Amino acid sequence: MNRFVQSACVSEPDGSVVALTLIGGENLKTAGPTGALAACQTVSERKRSVLVGLLGSGIQLSRTPAMHEAAARDLGIPYVYRLLDTDQMREPQPSLADLLRFAECFGFSGLNVTFPYKQEILPLLDELSPAASEVGSVNTVIFRDGRRIGDNTDVWGFRESFRRSMSEAPRRRVLLLGAGGAGAAVAHALLECDTGCVLIFDAEFFRATRLATRLKGRFGANRAEAVEDIAAAVRASDGIVNATPVGMVKLPGMPLKPEYIAPRHWVVDIIYFPLETELLRHAKRLGCQTSSGEGMAVFQAVRAFELFTGVEPNIDVMRATFADFDRASIE
Image 1 (spheres, rainbow, N blue to C red):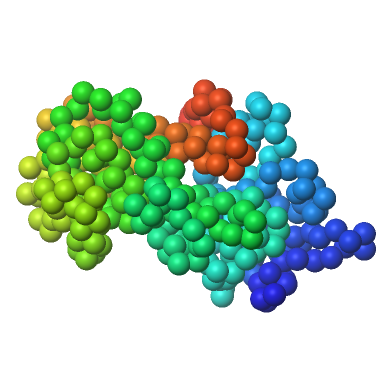
Image 2: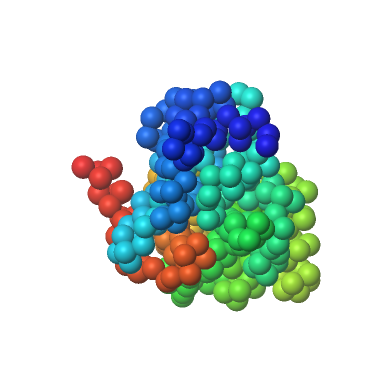
């Protein structure tokens, strides 16, 4: 067993195992109940519960744990959802491979995966669902029979949200900002929603080119294009989707110059904290039709919960829990 897992697994006199290092050991900061995991369950407790988590960077304000646990309470399922936040871990940080072994050691049923690991995690998995394989990105990992199975619920989550919020929006051409894991999922969803062509801009042009090539292989040669001139791409587009981290609390700002946007555009931002990003705020001032990251966050969580438990949750419960965060922040 590697050093990171050894330092996390501590035997008690009764034979149970507790995660002492999760709240102050060699590898993780002492951060109390909202630290990297804060999951000091014994093995026997975990056997009575479904234990899952979210793996990512800067995720302390995530609404995902609350949505999952509310859905589980509604169904009467013992369910524990914890954060594996690499921003809360001491240097040198454990590797992604170590973190996966750690989750398996502690009896996790699965993990949600977010920025920046959705693509980095791929070679560490044993199997990919058709959705994850097509997109080349994973946001959900199931641990089953000693195997790691990667899935992607972002495609379904964005597609369902987009169909509800932008059903009448023109989409001959749509500009997608960001070609990472989330961007790949959004691009597939847009084309599944009959978008004529997705124009892809990324600060690293090779990533935009790589994604466009994958999309052309699945949807056709004229359905995707990597672009370098963002101003020209905006002018050619009916709508704009931000799938970059620019606009998050930890990375404020706008992913493009505000003067590029016109009132005729519709604008979607998949970020949900803050719910109203600078991009959406500016677009609203112009009179653009807008949509936040709430819908995608809720719908992808619904599908992930079903993968973890085999039970379909009440979407209204998860949506109401998400909305409670906004009311709490206002109050």
